[in-house]
Image 1 (cartoon, rainbow, N blue to C red):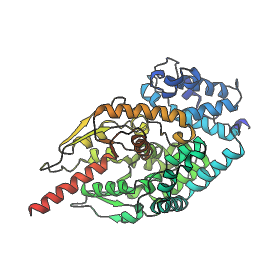
Image 2 (cartoon, helix red, strand yellow):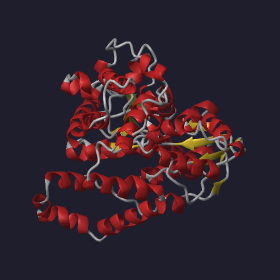
Image 3 (spheres, rainbow, N blue to C red):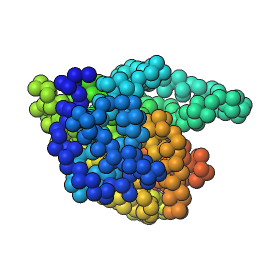
Image 4 (tube, rainbow, N blue to C red):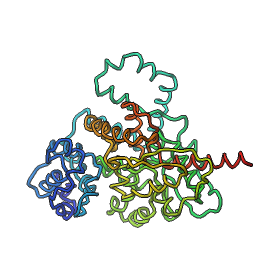
Length: 441
């Protein structure tokens, strides 16, 4: 590969120079604390990147494997006193690994083509797959297969993947949400709603709840029915050209000048969505709109606290004990930590119990729980122990990947908790208040 096409040699060298090798990131890194190997730490990975950028080391398979062993949780960025932009280094490193071809194999090439390059490039295909899974579940075939013992004949890897199969809801987002939802009461803002990929096919009710809460807080909500992937999966897995293509499509569908805010309710997606200007920095046709986009992209918790949450009547609100697990990319990537807690504390009679290691990765990390199941399961077990220690009956979280990981973890480790989004709890509180008001009238 020529130097002109090297992602690491094209990386702003000052980014890697910022690392002082102080080691303050080490205790925050899940892979380092598990292995205590320097190469499995942010500091060690940055050293590898710098050696390649300097031309002292060639890109080889161990480098690519190390970059994919990294969760990309960005906890190191929160700990770093020098402000090293590890997210930028991480994405460049994975892009370098993909461009070099050091990880290629027929099996891997096919899986990446099927998922990253085909399935997630057109969400109509993803919804078709979801409909097939839904039919498989509705016909009772999943229950029959799991109870028959046939799964024991499959390799452990396939058994693990089957166990992670999400429950597909009866309707997707477009079937639950109108293209334009008027504000309830005086209209204060006009916002756009991003329904996401996994969020759309697995947690469409959360998207509906998000739109309802926005409307109840004075927002007219525009939710186009046929949206595309935001490109987060592609950017985090070394496919920059595809990520750029999807960013352009998303900007075209949601012209930022037409909205007061563009809302994301998934922490992982939002962290990527706030950096379209960097992704499209060399595209003169999009760079101005990309800067506008970045300024208007808001996580739903962030936006609701910014505009002020409409109070929920406290009469007859049932007691709820809730703990909050922080999405890595919401807390470390977007630096949004207080707002979800403020939203939860706005719900009457809700007791928020702090979760030990609330910002420690649950092991989901995009598709990490699929590509690195052993490490992901260790992290999940640790997370479920901490959740169990709180005594909470509800776990709130603001990212679709984490939600699915926690749901599966609660079932696997027999922890009797409900896992849901903070916005859903707020939507339910508004509905209860409406019902109480109606019963009084």
